[in-house]
Structures are given as structure tokens and as C-alpha cells.
Length: 120
Image 1: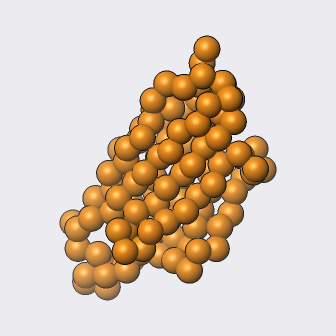
Image 2: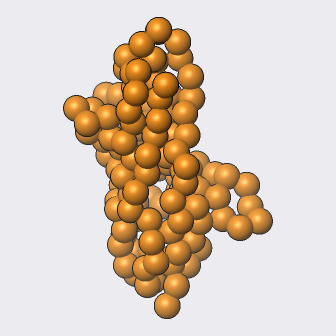
């Protein structure tokens, strides 16, 4: 089995920072693309950022210059550094990974979600 476990969410004031982490564990052969999505109340889940296994990144326009995705392949972990947070960033943030497991089967996995609330 494969699991993604997130940490790092919380309550922060506008202009503040948070760092999310997501660690993958289990019967992993290799991890391909990893990323972060978010879902605000009453809205659809949306992409925030992705990173390939060789470090190529993509950030959606609304977070460019404020959020940075990174990963540590040795730790099977992806991070999201969020700076200059705005109330509009309030959402549940979900970690995502496309993983080839030990049986060489490729599948998409999701974390359980972590709440980020930006409010004064």
C-alpha cells in the first residue's frame, strides 16, 4: 500500500507564511509527479503547483511569486512554502503524487488534506 501524510497547516494572519509537507510511504518503486491542490468552501478542487521527479515546477498564476513547491527525493517528500498569504488562500490543501508501486503499477494518490486558514 502507499500512503501520503500531510502536515503543516494552520491559522495564519494575512501576509504570514506556512510550510506544508507531504511524505509518501509504502510499497513505492518510484515517485513521478508530485503536487498540491486546494479546495475552498463551495468551490471545486484546483491545482496549486506541481513538480516532476527531475525538479521541473509549475505554479498557477494566482500563487506565482508567493508559493514555492519543492521536493526531497531521498525522503519521498514534497513541500509547499507559502508566503504573503491572503484570505483567498484559505482552503483545504491536498497533496498529490503519481507513483509507480513495487508491482510496477502506476496510480494517483492523495493525502488526507490539511486546513489552511488565513484570517486576522
